[in-house]
Length: 229
Length: 253
Length: 59
Image (tube, rainbow over all chains, first blue to last red):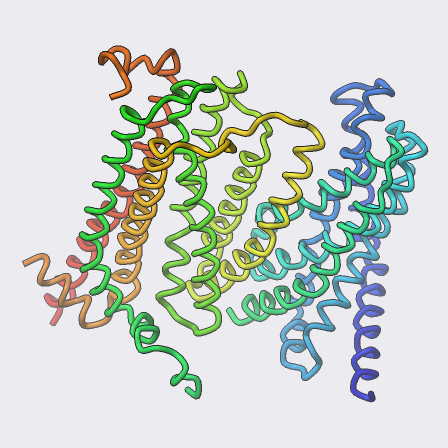
């Protein structure tokens, strides 16, 4: 009992520290959101500003933009800890690495995924997404973006020791994002046409649970490998 | 080692690069002959003797390349991930080498499967590329191969590279069924009821027998290329050991 | 034999281009996959032999 209590305390400690750190460096917090906004506004400019067309592609565009924005923020996830030696200390400490990793990913999600979800209605209005689709889009983003953070953290952990991490992470992680993208846009599109979206959300939730169970192990293993070199 | 009793002896012999080099040297000619016979015989049967399909005509003969390469590309990924896991768990160098050899071969086979799929699509669907569920899954598999290869080449330290790629390929292996399921679902949503290239009612014997021969031939060919690459890898990594020096000297006398 | 003549065989009922292109690509992939390791093998052995000779001449 005391043991799990200590673990919980530890989890919240790491979470608080990571949140504080990213609030201190505001650019890390804001840049992915600006990127999200910019990418989505490229589509009307690059393809067509016609409302019917935009309404049709809006779920896909918003999802792809969210995916890329998450990708952009991944590189810094473990890098500062790796460079200042905090990571090595965490690896040596008796605390379960599983919890540290989970706390860090959770903090990352709050800074990117959650923020993107909250920002998405703005983009939805700009892209003429029908009002009925709004809840589907937000719900799918809320359930899907944590998975993006979890999978992305595996890529970040694998490349943390490398200088040219940026493009490499995208190559490793993007193919793994495809199921989330498919079911996420599926949910939004179903909501627009008035179909039930519970099935999609259940699928996204199932993927999230699978990620929560398996990804921390992969991230922890990847961190140990990267730190040992 | 406490768990030494649990494993059969060959498992520990496999861990020895020298033993592997010797055994692959003996197996190579066997597999090379098998691959040559199966592939030549299978191709002749497939091109000249198998009956044409009543719907697709002679373009159906592409199946004898497309299906074996698609199967092989997937098996190769599985082998790569399993070998990587063995290398991670038992710190077995040879397993790491096998995993490293698999990536470029698998990627080239996936390219072959995609190219033949695209070519087959032209007479069947009238377009060089169709977002068919199987082709799309194969494309994503190719992306997974690219990721593994990029990671492997980006890390200089050999051990770290092997371990990192093993973790990545295991994550990919867990993802493959999810990707397949999601892509199939997505495909039915966007293109209902198009008939797929390879799904068909029961094939007659003269059609599936050459297919089986080609699949076996592709597997034998795969074994040959993996062994060739593995032997190179062993010689490079063990170049400072006595037996490799002896080997080089006897070959260049 | 499913074909009447050799031209028939090459034409593949109008699908000759697709069928032969597929088999040609398969041949290229197979040959490349065999050539690449064989060439590296030659290279490695040459390199190692040179290294050995150098080491022996130093002794």
